[in-house]
Length: 207
Image: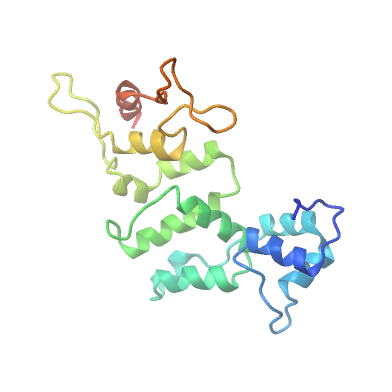
């Protein structure tokens, strides 16, 4: 299916395929609510995107957890029947990159981090990476919370964990890439690293 435009008239099948890509799947009609497929067909793709971007999350995952619910039930409830479907799907995709773990954090902390991704998912990458960097949960998970500056005699150096993840996972990755996504190579055919230990040390000093 080609990417729909504002002038595209969607069939039911096209609407289903579109919603499967940008949400967690079209929801049926329920109560006084039209089905997601009928709603999308009636307003068009551009209006649907504008509606979704403007749609806030009224109850956060942290709200649910503090009220005694399990985070997993809050997450799945939002995926299956929440109104802010595009926001939830986008934040879920970001959570596969900007990862924290319930093995290292309390459930309310993981819930708050999930809310952070949902709140910031439609901003710029620059805004998102600053928000993630300032997150208490990421600071604890990647061990730069209360990070100390280098001790000149060399008895202490800044924690490098977050600096490594910024470079390796959150931004440029391990290898330099060509415009088509293939790895850049040197004259001997070896892949060229995107950064080295000096880059890690320099970035670690920032944090």
